[in-house]
Structure formats: C-alpha cells, structure tokens
Length: 291
Length: 291
Image (cartoon, rainbow over all chains, first blue to last red; front, top):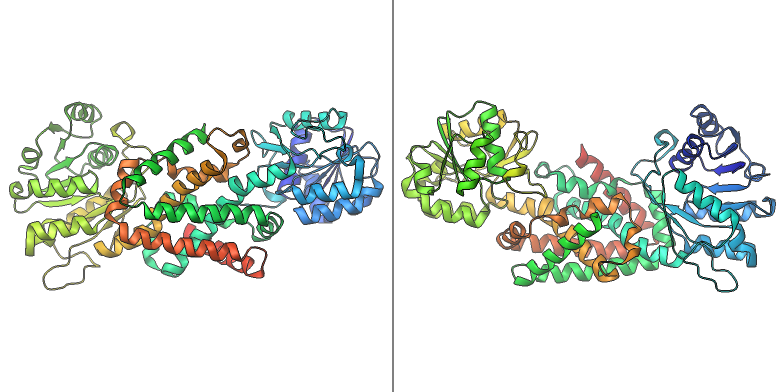
C-alpha cells in the first residue's frame, strides 16, 4: 500500500492507523477528521498527515478506509466516488453490510466489486474515541470481508481474483486479523444473532431490573460477577446501536422474536425434566463456541 | 470460633476452610465429605481433620457450615439437628433461602433464629469442585445473611443481638466478605432477577443460536467478545441450576415473564425514537450498577 486514506479518526480508524504503521504496511497515511483529531492522530503516529476535506483526502490514494458508522459511510462513499483514482479500493468497518453493499452497487454499477470491498472488523468495545485507540485492537479479531456479487454471479463467498482485494486481505492478516469471507446478506443475518441480539439482551436485562427494583434500590447490591458480565454490553454507545438496529431491523427483529419464544419455552420447562435437557444442550453449545 | 464443621468439600466448602485458616479464625476445622476429598482438603490445609459421618462431624462444634446444594442442606439440617450442641450455630451457602429457612423453622420451632442463620455468599463460578478452591474466593464478595423471623416478629432485616450471629458476621467480614442482611423471601425475589434471570438468558441465548444455525455451523465463527461474555454463564453446572430453578421457580418465572414482555416491547421500538430513549435508560442503569 502506497498511499492510504483513513476517514474517521475514532477508536476504529485510529487503531487501524496505528496497526498499519506498526506493521510498516503503508508509505503514507492520510487521516481525515476534525482538526483536533488530526493533530492528536499525528502525535500518536496513527497518521502521517491530516486533511479536513474528504474529497481532497482521497486524491491519489490506492486504499480508502471508511471508519465511520454505516449511514455516514454510505454518504461518504457517494461523495468521494467521482474523485477516487480508478485503481483505488474502498473498504469500510460498518457493523452491518447490506445497506452499504447496496449503495456501492448503485454508485459503481458493474464495477462495484472492483472498486469496493465492504468489511467489518468485530473489534467493537464498550468504549469509543481516538483516546482509546491501540495498535493491537485487531490482533486475533475476526475481520469479515463481504465481496459484492459481480455481474457474472460469481461465488461471493470467496475473494475474487482482484489484486487490490488480495492486497487488502493480506494487509489485514499482517495486522493480526482473522479474515472471514461471506456475503453482505449472510453477514447481517449472522450478526443479528451473534452480536446484535446479545446487545439487545443486555440492554433489556437492564430495563427489566430497573423496572422491577427502581435504579437506586439497595437490594440491587445483592448481585455477583455474572450480572456484571451480562450488563457490560448495555453500557455501549447508543448512537452506534441506533444505526445498527435501524439498518438491520428485519434480521434483528427475527432474532429477538426467536429468543422470546425460546425464553417462554424455557420458562415453561422450569421444574420439568426438559429443563435439564435444554440446560445441558445449551452448555455444550456454549463450550463448543468457546473453542 | 473454636471448633468449626464444614460439611461439603467442594469449591465453596474448600475455599471457606482455606479462608478461615488463613485468617486464623478457627482452632480446629472438621471437614465432612468423601474420604478422598477429606484427604485432599487436609493436604491443602483447608481442614484439620476429616470425618465421613455427618452426625459425628458436628459433635462439639460451635459453628456448622453446610456447603452443599439447597436440597442436600435441608436434608442434612434435619439429620444433624438432634446432635448439635445447644450453643452451636448452623449456617449454609445455598443459592436460594426460603426453602432452607422454612425447614429450619419447622425443625427448631421457636428457637430457629437462635440455632440457624441462613447465608449465601455470591461467589459462584462456572467451575466447581475442591480443585478450584482458593483462599480469596470470598474477598469482596457479597455474603447475604437472612435471619429467621423470631416469634416476636422482630425486624429480620438486621442481625439479632445473638452472640453467635455476631461472631459469624464478624468472621465473614474478616475473610473479606461484604455482609448484607435481608429476609429469606426478599433474598429469593432479588436473586431471581440479579442472578437466576441472567443465567437463564445466557442459557436461552445459546439455545436460540443453536436453533438458528446448528451447532457446527462455520458462520458462528463470526462473533466477538460480547457474545462470549453473554455465553459464559451458559457453561455453568446443570445440577446446581436445576435445584435453583426448582426451589425458586415462582420468582424466577415472574422475572422471566417480565423479561419476555420487555424484550417484546423493545423489539417493537426498533426504528422508533423510543428505542434510543430506552437504550440510554438501560445504559445509565448499567453504569450505575457497575458503580
């Protein structure tokens, strides 16, 4: 990678700059964001130079990372599209992929697969902002790439033989990410269950406790580490989740509805032998997933 | 404490022995359990001597800790009652308190409050067994004591002025526990929300994922730390939770039902401004609880 542009200098963008620099993967990194963030990112050595104008920031870059929430990334893609070098590859880090993929297809038409490779590093934390950026945020993290289906209907489940795609794939592996390929649609359905549903459960658990006790109730001191684990996600950033819940609404609603039905069935099994069977089945699954 | 008996040499009983010894709180600790556990507990210095017979093990002891699951502790209480020294105080570590309290009232009648002080250290882990016992298991853990309402209808929310109660309270504080008093009934209602409901959610989340994907589905590799946190409790011991779910069934069913209703309402708020309001409310609550 010669010239890389990172648009959005928060936890994700800042950490990406630090990781690319540390691995010596880019000759020059331009960071686009508010002036004080540019300054701070240069001080941290996350970027080499700063730029306030998005159009200007992508000039001459061969890789552009959109490190902003989904809706913002879609607007930015539209904005920068006419100004990209024809060989440039754009990728993003958004939590849902279908809407971004649809926008890319619409903007670039038949060359969308060539120009854009949507991505999603599963490295979110309950904190955000450049001040929490670290060079190893992506070490061992799953980084999903969702190639856009090309006109010939090629297998989107595997990286197309496009040089810039291979270069991105290899760079992500170099910074320690475990790259997984899938389609934008399959990504969103999977994440509804493995990420968005757990978030909603944590949030709704907090609401349920508040409703049953009232926030300041001293009885709530009677709790242990298990509850704190289950409420960790509830401390996440609301604006990010508002966007995710909106852009993946249908999949998420389906996952939540399924959970509601399973919860009801499990409640009805309390005190019956089925409870034990289900409990053990869940235990095996959780152990398997832990690996 | 002169002579202490610990019945049940698992994670809880073993850790208690180690903590009492380390703090120099007991002159002699008798451990009751299977012969190989006695041997191992003596080697670890968790107990001074072992005993296989429960009746024999309580002879001459001034404090008896029942470190077994709820149903076993009830049966043991019945068994040892006629053989206790009249000054002895019995306590337990069971996860629910109403059933044990009712048994104590039935066995000891008007002197129940004098003879038994039910307890519950919130120090469970997803592991169990003497091999995981550690001296600091109870450091900073909430240890609930639920005095039995005496005949005069005294305030059960506070420790009665009974010397053995004070001695137990002080010993628990010495080993680092944060002692909290409440009634057996209030304990069970609270725990249904702060401990049993989170456990059921974790278990049901695993069931929902398994149902949606099938256990070995490679799509499941697309997950992050948030899911692993939310599935940690699902790896807990089934037999223990079967007993808890049975002995606290009514409270737990109520908590689950409330959660189901909240989950449905939250699902219906997806994409509406109410989502953001609820999300922020939950976030404040979760932050408050973290302290």
